[in-house]
Image: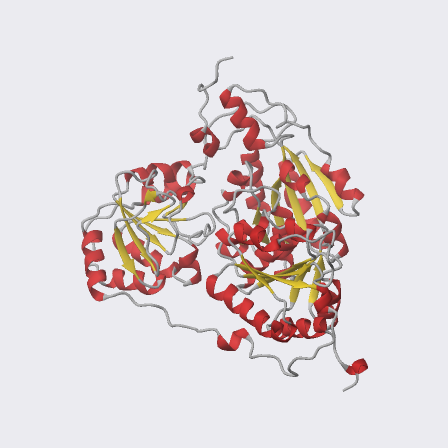
Length: 557
C-alpha cells in the first residue's frame, strides 16, 4: 500500500466513532480536533457546530437523555477543554453517558501555547479521562470509552495529541468489535420473596401511603405498576423533578416532591405515614432527608437501595429489585383495603388547587409568571417538546401538571443556570420532527445568547419563552430577604425581541396572555425559531425561595 492510499489516524478514529453508531456530534472545532471532525462529517455524522464548548457538552447531555444513547461532543485542546468544567459535573450527577473527543497538545513540541495537563481538570468533575498516545490502540480505546460511558453512566473524555492524529495509519485494517455487541444486557432483577414479605407488612400497617417515583421508575417502565400500587393502598402519587409528568393524567398525583412541591403536595406529604420511593436517588432536593414527610417511614425500592444520601439518613426499609418487578411483587402481596386515604374530594382538591396561592402585588404593565405559565400550559400543543432551564423561573415552569414526562426535559443536578439553550438544541437534534419550547430566564439566556446564531444556521425549530424580570431572580430575592443591597443582581430588562431579530430570528414582546393561542398557531404554521419576551414582576417569589429565605431575617446595618 502506498502512502497516498493510506488513511490518516484521524480517518480511522472517525470510522471508529461511526461504527459505534454515532449519528450526531455537537462540535466546536480547533487545531486539535478539526481534521477528525471533518472526516466524521464526511462519513455521514450530523454535525451541530455550536459557538461555545460548554454548549457542545450541554446539548450532548440533553441528546443523551432524550435518545437513551451515548451523547457525543468534541472540542479542541487547552482552552477548548477548560470550557467544559461547568457542564461535566452536571452530566456526571445526572448519570448521562457521554463521550467527548478532545484534542491534546502535540507530543513532538517541546512547548505549545495551548498545552495544559487536562486529566486533573476532567477527573475533578467526576468524569473519566483517557489520554490516547498509541495510535495502533486508539480504535480499541474508543470502543472501550463507549463501553465505560454506557456501563458507568457518566462522561468519558478522550484526549488525543493532534500530531498523532495526523500520522499515516499503520495499525490493523479492521476495527474492533463495537461496544453495542459487547455490552451486557442483564435481565431485570426480581425481588427476594422474604424482602417482599417484610415490605408488605410495612405497607399493611400504614394508613397514608405515598408512592414516589424517580427516573429509575421511568427507565424501568414502572409507571403503571406504581399507579396500581397507589390504587391498591388508597394512596397518592408523586415524582422527582426529572420524572415529573410520569403520572400527569392521574387524579391522585400531587405533583413533584422536593423543592418544587406545590401547596397541596406539601400538605399531603406532611400527613403521610409511609413513602414508597421507587427508582429514585433520594437526594436532598427531592425531599430525601424526610423533611417533607416527617411523620412517615421510607421504603426504598431500587436496584441499589439507599440508607444514607448526601449526609442524611434517607430510608430504613429497603427492597432490592428492578423498579417495575419490585412494585408489582409488592402489590401482589398486599390484601385489598377496607378503607382508603384517597377520596373523590381529595382528587377534586388536587385538580383545583393552585400550585402557589400566595398573593403578590403585580406592577402595572407586568405579568405574574404563574399566570403566564398557566396560560402557556393551556395553549401549547400537547405533542411539542418542552425544556425547562434552571434558575428562579424554573419553579413556575415545572408546575405544568398536564404535561407528560416524555415531553418535558429537566436537567439541573449541578444547579447552574445558562444551560437552557444548550439543552434545547440537544432536544431539537434528537426530536427534529417536533417543535421545541425552551423555558428560560433572562439572566440564564444571556449567558449563552450566542447560540441563537447556531439555532438559525442549523434551522432548529425552537421557541424560546423568556421570563424577563430584569434580574438574577434567585439572587435578588435572597438579597432582599437578608436586607442586603441588590446591586449586581439587577441589570434591567434586555430587549430579547430585538436581540432575536438581530440574529435573524423572530422576536415578540408578549403583553397579553389572551394573545397566546393565536401566536402559537402562527408559529406552528411558519416554523423556524423565535424568542417571546414576557416582562414579569420581580415581586413574585417562588415558594422554594420563600421557604429557604423567609422575610424578616434581615441583617442589621
